[in-house]
Image 1 (cartoon, rainbow, N blue to C red):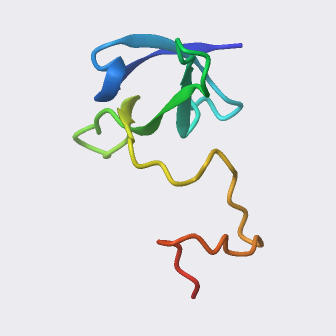
Image 2 (image 1 turned 180 degrees about the horizontal axis):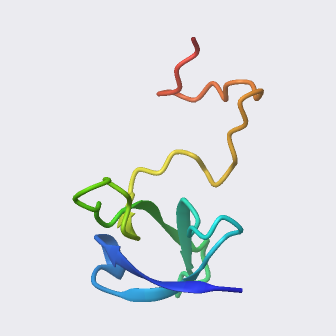
Length: 96
């Protein structure tokens, strides 16, 4: 599989560049979750990073790469949201 050196910004991984596996479309995943074990044996902490464009070309505005930004307020819980799914009913979700 192909991988791409992807920079991380913000949070505990700030300034690091890691090889991230690319999907079938040639892009890294939209979210990157890093589980960190608790030294006292409790549940692990999970750091969530969101994929954002690194930059755009001047002429056509094409994306020139990706980077990950720290998202401390992740509310997805790691689940996929399908268009036909029912709303979860959590605060902050809009039911329209």
